[in-house]
Image (cartoon, rainbow, N blue to C red):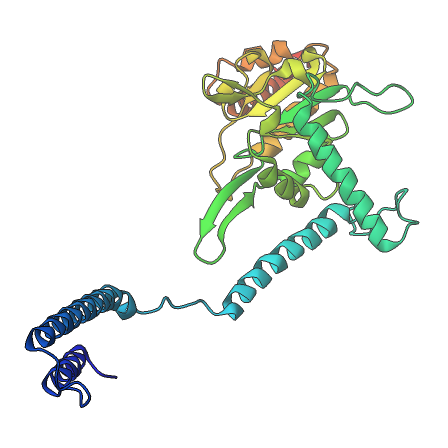
Length: 354
């Protein structure tokens, strides 16, 4: 390409040539006429030069304006395989979650030996069974969230010919039956209190055993499953069944749907039943020691109450409220009673508890 300066030189040479070299057939043209022609030629040349200069200046400005835009490096585009990989992970996670929900919520219930319990859906195809059970479980949980908690925590007392124990025993789980323990080898775990199996086996004949704790259900239920494989504990009440009073989860016995004259609460915290202080039998808090024998003594105490068929247990429990360690006082009373029997064999049996 020819630049602007070259164009200017060519135009000047062309104009000069036309002026200096007269046409061969026009030798008799006057001098004035030649001068006017020269002036017109110069004007035309100046106009052409001005237009060419303006164009060159505009082109240079455009080049200068476009230069920084061309210098910018192009944005790196993300490879398509990365987007596809991310979408695959998300979709795979969602699909895996759905499969897990169908399996966990749709599998049939199992008995204590791990065998599946047949229900009305067992005759359907396998996939339909799981989907139907999952849908029924989701509907059940939705109903639990929408409906308010019932004022009755326990069902009504069963009538004859079914067997209903005379008394109701309400037990705390933490630091009464088990204690949280941590070691380097096992980490956190719940330690079983000495004598738990003997205690449950002894009192189950005369007491309706209920575990009422402020622990979350996801913590309490697996522990109780391992603690009570024989099913001595009839009902399990967790934090959702407690009442929040002054920032403390309490146990409202009015919602148990049981006769409070025959309800005994065993707990280490006296503040757990502030509305019914005469129904609690406070024992020492277990801290994980292996030489503990309080459950054996507690089984003996409850056995005497059932043996004497007391109509209102609150009289005896009110008496033991005044002592810091009711179990030790009960053992002391038994020792004194044994001495009295040796001296006076005709001692009344009703004095055995006090």
